[in-house]
Structures are given as structure tokens and as C-alpha cells.
Image (cartoon, rainbow, N blue to C red; front, side, top):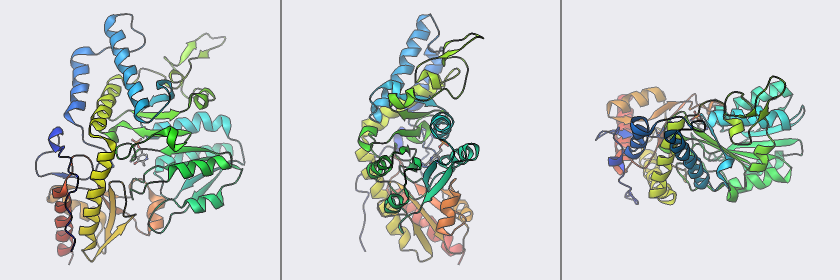
Length: 404
Ligand code: PMP
């Protein structure tokens, strides 16, 4: 038997005030816990520096505007955007995809055009396109998966035609952890004249991301999966693409000049940010980006890969466990136990202070393809170590004993 050690421990659990000793938090793919530096950035803003942004003539507001825009610049740098103006702050990845559908989709797509998605997409990268398809008369095609749970880009290559105007795929699957060959996906999309949107929710906390190197046209992510606050996310698109997109919501802050005769709009990104933004959320995101960059995304990826190897090896020794997804998953392991509903698995693990997610993970078409109603999912973050994986494996052994 190979004895796997936690090859690259990060020992970061002490940074996280909401993780008590002895609690194995294995639900980072749903939402990440927050390091003290993020909590402090948010608290400090509300305690001492809070004011609105962009509109105030007083110093406090001007200072807050500088901090808010610095967060945008940090997000741009973090994913390799050419300029801070290419980052649109939204409520999360879900809103970002809905924005692209409502703005870019309604102006660049027409009846008969096709969109290529994949079988493993999160509902937030399916339903906005279905709503748009119903409205405009588009067709949606679904790229199948390989046997080990990756988006099958050979199949995508065969499926893509000049009628495809958009390919929209998860950079990392929230259920299987499989990593897309995004560069190849971009090349395949561009070959037929389609744009590529990457859903980066599960990628940005786990992999170095550089939108220029990936060659995608849109990139979206949520701050709360990146150790930042809920209620904030980013849409990236090139300045040229954003310039080609009309407003999608109207209100304050997104205008150039308003009159009843004719209203004109601000340039991007303000054009897409109607209303008072999540000011403090942006400061929290900035702190989260600084935090993960301080550790290094390469180190985080290696750490989580070691935990995945350890978890897969431990679980594969338990006969009734069925593992899904590829060996080289990015920090996420989904599994099922014969004859036991994943909800029961989750409940019994909770008694042992191991928190996993059980359900369809907002990926019902993937569940259908896997032939299960739900899976149990363990997902890792910078605070997890070998002891958490061992607690998971011990908990699963207990589940199998209870269910005979
Ligand atoms: N895409 C993926 C791959 C996800 O994991 C999630 C969150 N589970 C989303 C999109 C939606 O993110 P949010 O709910 O933060 O908008």
C-alpha cells in the first residue's frame, strides 16, 4: 500500500476564524471560508472608512472610490486582463452569465444561431442560455463527456459549425473537478467564428488563470468561492467586446446624461453597473486576492492535488464507494456509496464533524449522465490537510458499517 503524505501542507487553518479545531470543512466548492484578513478588510471598511463611491465630493468618498477601483485593478491583474476597465463588478457568476446573455446575446445572436454547452455545466451556465434561446429562437447543443468526466473536446470539434456563435463551458467542473483544456476550447470555438465564455467559479481559487493565455472571450467568477465575500463577482471581457454590448439594467451610475428626450450611457464597465455597488464587497475581494496571491496559486493547486490523491486512494479502498471524475481533479472529489443516499452520507459525516455537500450540485444534467440522482462531494481549500481527508475516510467507513 502506498502511504501518501500531505505532500505540500499549507497549514493555513489558523488564518480562518470560523473553522474550529477538529472540524473538517470540505465544502469549499459551495463557498470558501474567509481568512481573518478578509473579515478585517470588511470590518475595517464599515467601522472606519465607509462612504459611497464615485459620487461624493468629500474626501472620505474620494478615498473609498480609490479603494474600490483598486479592487477592480487587483481583479484585472489577478486574471491577466489588459485593463481594470475590462472588469465588470456583478453580484456573482450567475449574474455575470445572465448579463452576457441579456446584453451580448440579445444583440449578437439571432434565430437559428447555435450555442454549445457541455453535459457538466452548472445550472447557471445552462438556464440563462435556455431563456435566451426561447426568446430568440436559438438552438443549444450539449457536448458529451469523456469516460473519466472531462468535456470531450474531440466531440466538440465534430459538433461545432459556423452556426455556433457561442461556446460556454466550465473551466473547472464544480462536481468532478475536471479541468478544461481551455486553450483548445478557445481555438475550436474561434475556428468556427464563435466566442468562448469560461465559467471560472471553481478555477480561480485553484489554478493560476490568465485570460490572455487562455484565449477566451468572457470569463466569470464569484468572490465567495475565492475566500472573499458573497454578493460580488466579476465578468471579464475585452474592452472591444464590452464596447459592443448595450446596457442590460438601467439606473444610477451607468449613464452619461439622462433626459426625457434621450439618455446616453457611460462607457464600460460603469455601463453595466447600475445602482450603488457592493462597495465593501469589492474591498473584501481585494483582500482575498492578496491572500491567495500571497500563498501562490501554483502552491494551492499542488496542495489540493495532493489532497485529491489521498482522498481518492483512501475512498477507493472502500468496496462500496464509487468515485466519479478524473484522477487529476482540481480539489474536488465526488462519490456515491452503493445503497446509501448521499444525504445520509452527509448527515452521518456531520456527526463526525466532517462537512461535505450532498445533492445534485446544481448540475442535474450531469447527474443524469452519471446515472445517479445525487453525489456526495468533498472539496478542498487552503485550510484543509491530511487529517481532514483521514476524517472523511473514517466517516465513510462508519457509513458503510451503519448501512451494513
Ligand atoms: N458555476 C459554477 C461552476 C459553480 O460552482 C457555481 C456555484 N456553485 C456557479 C457557477 C454559480 O455561482 P454563484 O452562485 O456564486 O453565482
